[in-house]
Structures are given as C-alpha cells and as structure tokens.
Length: 88
Image 1 (cartoon, rainbow, N blue to C red):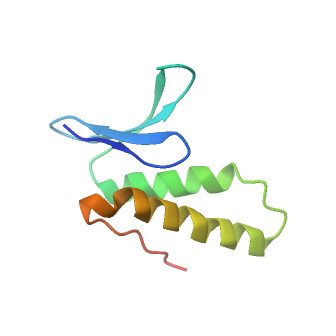
Image 2 (image 1 turned 180 degrees about the vertical axis):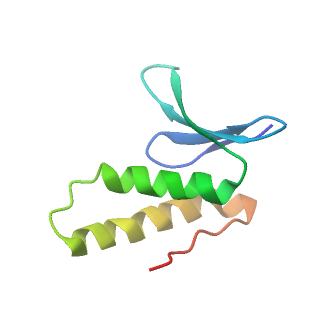
C-alpha cells in the first residue's frame, strides 16, 4: 500500500480502493482529511488547504505561494514520476 510524505505534514496512504489524505497532528498521530479515488483530486485538495492557511496579504503573495507549493509537491512526487502543473 502507498505511504508517501508530501508537504506541510500531509501524507498519502492507500487501501485497495482509494487514496487517503492524512495530516500529522501531534506525536505519532494522524488525522484523515479525505478519501479520493483519483490522486489528482487529492493533490488539488492539498494545494487548496495550503493556500487557505497562508498569510498572504496580496494576490501576488498568494500566487507566489501557489508556485512554491507546486514546486514542493513536485519534489516530493519526483520518485513516482508524477508532476503537478498549475492551471493558472
């Protein structure tokens, strides 16, 4: 089964039917964030959650942070040959 560290404490696990997005909370604890049949939807959720939690004070700061998130995700996903691209 899949067990992949992403960014900002998020990671992916899987079972025979779905991918599960988790967030680390505390010592050796995790919280399920969502269940996804397609990894693309899971990655979109990670990006959205990071953006929602940002401290951006302008649209430009938010766009720059978006690019940073994409870069970090691509580094985490390189061994899997998955690439996240921005639609904007």
